Length: 596
Ligand SMILES: Cc1cc2nc3c(=O)[nH]c(=O)nc-3n(C[C@H](O)[C@H](O)[C@H](O)COP(=O)(O)OP(=O)(O)OC[C@H]3O[C@@H](n4cnc5c(N)ncnc54)[C@H](O)[C@@H]3O)c2cc1C
Ligand SMILES: *[C@@H]1O[C@H](CO)[C@@H](O)[C@H](O)[C@H]1NC(C)=O
Ligand SMILES: *[C@@H]1O[C@H](CO)[C@@H](O)[C@H](O)[C@H]1NC(C)=O
Ligand SMILES: *[C@@H]1O[C@H](CO)[C@@H](O)[C@H](O)[C@H]1NC(C)=O
Ligand SMILES: *[C@@H]1O[C@H](CO)[C@@H](O)[C@H](O)[C@H]1NC(C)=O
Ligand SMILES: *[C@@H]1O[C@H](CO)[C@@H](O)[C@H](O)[C@H]1NC(C)=O
Ligand SMILES: *[C@@H]1O[C@H](CO)[C@@H](O)[C@H](O)[C@H]1NC(C)=O
Image (cartoon, rainbow, N blue to C red; front, top):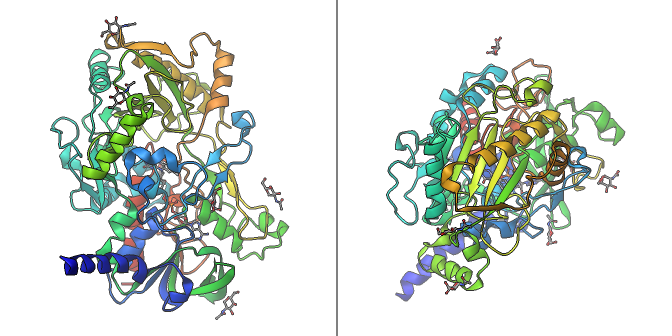
């Protein structure tokens, strides 16, 4: 027994001590075939796939801390506790947002191994086939079409039974899910029967507007589907649990260094007329080091970090760089531009039922019991995020006033304009304030097809100064008007007869506001969906804009790729982890093919 225990300890100890290095002094060397910048959602996928070949050596440089044993990350229900300032966050804030009446908003991004997959809401949605077919059109590469990407959804996904093992017949379509991939995906594992039955009954009473859809992840998302999350066995599934699990982290050709913040790319040479970087400068403690890549440098620092490092390295708009005295390497004006996210707004109502999330969040005894049950058996209410029981994907009416200010920005008739998170509680995701003591439900309204665009820029030549983050929320009138339609649609949803006797007062009550007051209220309350993309967008070869070509190689530079959410040129009608995993899988294949 004693021997057995010490073997187990040795194995687990080695996972942290041997290949995930906490100290640069322990790193065996600084020369590798590939250096990956950022051990986040996408970076770990690429690291895993490249090191399947034992002859290829890879170093991952991650600025943040270890995610190992971080309970707040492991327990799905505790996700909100990771959204404030903490050692696990970059603690960013946006610039004042003109579309939000001048407000700056907190902008959480994970500062830990696994990146945002280790603190996100775990909602698992892929988007519409039309989204991907538009990417194929924009890049001229069918590999980014729905049919081209679909195998990469299956490849990363490991469909898993829910934590309560309930009968899932009629709650999803098994034919469109992967079963062998590293990222666990499951249906909720703790029921909220009154709310769930009310939602499902709504799809029967108002089937034209809110039809039931067996599975929103088929490429045809329109309608109301059961929530799917990146959770397995009641625990959060992250890019680390999935792609750096012990069998791959033990590969002697893969090294991961934590606490290593990359400043810029260095050691420029020329390769067939193009500049090429041989080194990556990073800070560990208070000292600077250079890691060398003989084949390629891969930027996976996310939609904020990736353009920040490109700009620090002299790749960006010539004017910005010269104003800061940063030597220009390549004039690529699109770096950091085209930043966008889904603006998020929410409506809440009191309900005549004690069966809501408040039965846990407003009862310390019940909350302690819930956590104890999770620790004992990974069952009970803490196995889910609490973000929703269902999601609805909806199109605006064709006579929406939003279309008078802008042509339809959606990629096709199979793609939604709006998303509803149907939440069996109040004040949950996205910074909605808690409505008070009582029992509530929420409809979170997210604009799936935003027109507004912002930017990630720098205003300092100090590579360690934070970038300026401007998601440009509601700078287009289309976005504001579409969200106003969302408010009306949400009220329509809860007008189905089944809500009689269950639904109480709207809180806060917006029903008395005139149109101008409602629009002002939306501007005063819109928050983010955490889905920022587009800041190192891919475009066709030879296109005047864009940062990477359809093979994800930075335009005008040799030996440098971007593989993360920054390359997504237009945000899909989806939460963005599934597309990040799928694009990272395909991105890794593209790199492997180049060096085969
Ligand atoms: C709070 C929150 C909730 C979300 N909820 C959901 C959800 O429910 N469902 C969903 O699908 N999506 C969700 N998302 C979005 C999704 O998680 C992201 O789109 C996706 O994880 C992005 O992956 P990435 O690899 O591009 O970036 P990241 O996962 O952020 O990885 C980037 C990594 O690079 C590191 N890094 C950055 N700069 C440097 C540097 N200079 N040097 C070294 N390392 C660096 C970072 O620390 C990080 O580990 C959420 C995101 C957030 C922030
Ligand atoms: C974020 O803030 C917390 C607490 O305020 C701090 O401990 C942490 O170091 C900060 N993160 C970064 C990356 O600076
Ligand atoms: C993209 O779609 C437009 C309009 O349908 C078409 O004219 C164009 O040729 C397409 N481009 C590519 C690269 O497929
Ligand atoms: C690489 O760049 C670093 C930082 O600029 C410099 O110190 C180092 O000498 C360079 N190494 C080579 C081999 O050029
Ligand atoms: C709080 O939870 C405990 C334990 O489940 C329960 O006994 C108690 O009735 C709850 N209190 C309220 C006010 O609902
Ligand atoms: C850059 O912007 C930040 C945030 O707006 C500000 O605090 C800082 O002073 C600016 N720095 C420079 C050099 O302009
Ligand atoms: C609340 O629900 C109960 C039982 O379902 C019902 O009798 C009562 O009328 C409802 N109250 C309101 C205000 O609708």
